Image (cartoon, rainbow, N blue to C red; front, side, top):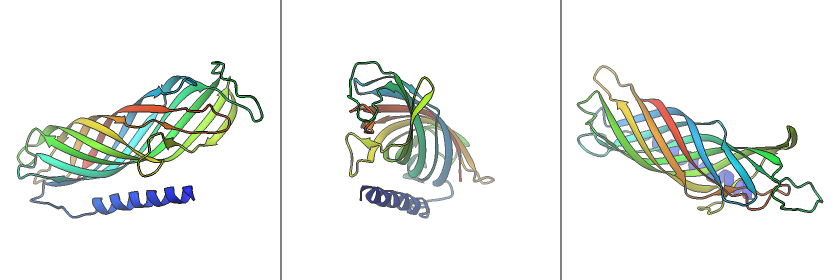
Length: 246
């Protein structure tokens, strides 16, 4: 029943963003007042373990890809609102306990097992952006944006080993400690500093690059019979987004 509920949330989440991105250029006032943007980014994660039962959190290779629709909110085309859909893959390594079945769970601070976790997310970024030059009469401009990112924990894969010998490998059920609507849903808050080219009469293709920082409101965790209890993980992320707009 729980898996069915999560699939329903995921379907609603994806349909809402797809319809929004497909909307016409409202409240359009010309060729330079709306964009559809596509981007990719390498990501660095900063992880903290909110538990006494694990140590040595280290980030794994992370990546994001996104599409978003952006509309101008003023006649000078300097203030924009956007909504989009992002696939976000990130991971962390840490040391903790591993309890075999039918053994006594002793928390002796040995931390002899290596945990390798990858998390797949779908994010819904809603952002407000201000460009320091009007996009109507400038070829390029720096900008700043702030945003709220709704997060959905789509899947998580975990491998546990000791001295290179794999003890467990498979998927785990990630949840937020402080859920919103569902145990799979919570949010980021983020800020971006970027630079973009603008549309011209000769070209409708634009390019952008931005440094993005986001912070997660809630720790997330998984619970398995072989793992320690209360393995709460929190994270923030720094990414370099590059992409094109039309």
